Length: 429
Image (cartoon, rainbow, N blue to C red; front, side, top):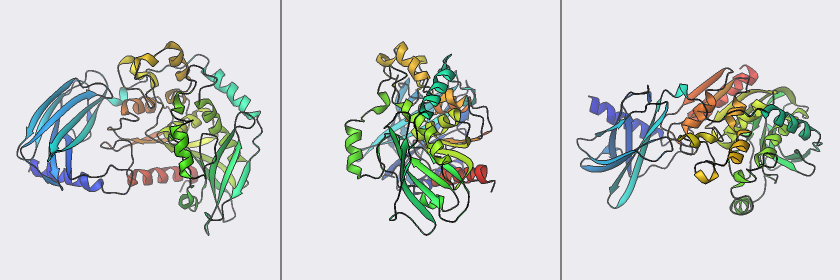
């Protein structure tokens, strides 16, 4: 019966993976791992075992050789070996952790000449994780000064109606406004309901990269002003080839630009730009004064950071936030995207000091409004050790939705839950 339950569980997981989202594409062979705790959680010192099955079109295979590696989150494997699947499954003893964190099991097999892999990650007392990154003594002085300086720069907003994008319920605009320096602008796509009235607003902040933004037209039709911004000071309605060229050229690895200088680090204009976006929203006559932030990855970080900097934010949605506990690698544990300090050569005192002024955890400590956070344990872009380190220092009301087997993507259900949550926070519906 236990064997049947395990196979049914695997089939159900495979069914979930067919849902339309940024979910990895299913292959002919799927390697599935199921830990012996159904909640994927263990206390430090508890041992974890993974049951592994190889499925071909959803049906279990036998006599398959499996290679496995066990590692702590983002660390090199400390245990490896091979084993054989018999009677549909094989069990791998992954050991334990003596300190809070995450333990990951990677498995690999070759079938008819093709290599396949699978992964599962479990947490050990993750609620006890605390960041390595510390709060600089002059953190508040630094950011208060930058707020004041940015405010001195007139917004000079520009709005261009995009008739081809408008619907019978929503007007769509390409907008821009000045940021923290004269001539430096933030661009975005603004959606406003056509029906006369006052509406709450959502500032949607972007994931990493450089791209166009089409706007949240359907969501706006439900009664929200939604401003979706880019962070790079370029229009967000250009052909995709321009963004690809910039990403491979002038803006390649922008997140490392000027990391040795806290006044010139790339993210300074990004963080002030998010606050100026709120200034812009406040100029809209349709705005009712209630505003939330929403984003994932880099956007998940910016959603938290903006709330930590600007008390006008009333609610926060953050999926797998980046830039969390960047200094984690200095203590032999995971650091957040963009993994600045994974290479020891980058771990200079100056760069570590500058990074602390921009680390998500130091803004998360300042949040006083409700937060919804969601991520998965298999995420190796924004590792769970780092996201938990940020989540655990939030002292305001907060809600955590874990999709344990996901990596750097969301299921449609997660997104629906998040939108329902922020709708309730901003409208009490």
